[in-house]
Image (cartoon, rainbow, N blue to C red; front, side, top):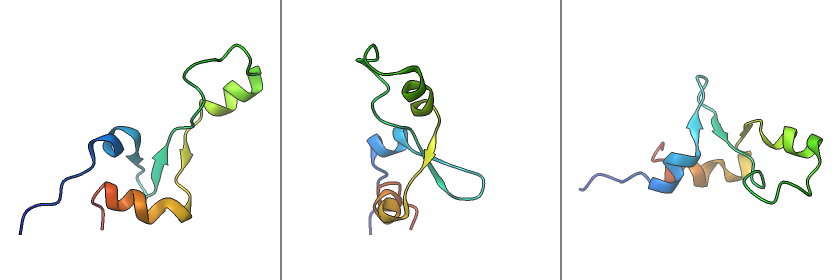
Length: 65
């Protein structure tokens, strides 16, 4: 049986924490920043965690099962 390949896009977008959770970045922080408030941009720059509703799908893309 062949090895399962990790999704190339997913491995660039997600990272594992030390406790095994999956870190992600926020969307909407790359362009058209002039109309967004300072508060909105500041809150978008912090990393978040993948929600449990999407956890199984992301784990499958990263071959973590």
